[in-house]
Image (cartoon, rainbow, N blue to C red):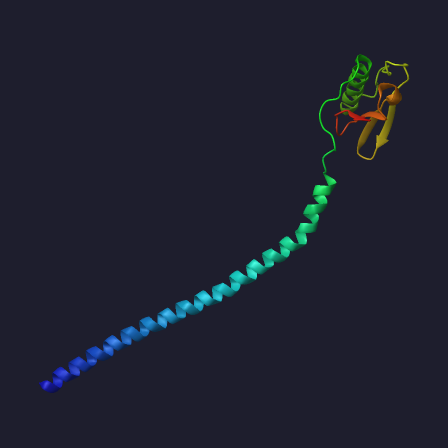
Length: 151
């Protein structure tokens, strides 16, 4: 009977050892899988860094391309300049609506007709007497219907 007890104890010890061994092997396999994923994560991270590095010059170029004007805000203008700007807006509105008849709009200072220029992506309308209004250029475009008053 003692031999049976010893065999039972030995079998239990072997069974426990085999359970512990299988558990240890599973842990090692899980660690190995985690290590495999780490390599993939680092590869993805490296790829992201490379993509960002290639995009940085484009970002700086876009910032320079869409630079804001040096001065924003309102400009004090006289009544005749305001009438000239109002005429420019009306002309651009007609051009945006594809109306071919622009009317008899002229600068209120000396009644010269406005200069209409066809650009690559729309029209530009400019006052022929911008100097008399106190500006070097007084214009508006169909793509950007905000008057540009350049001193």
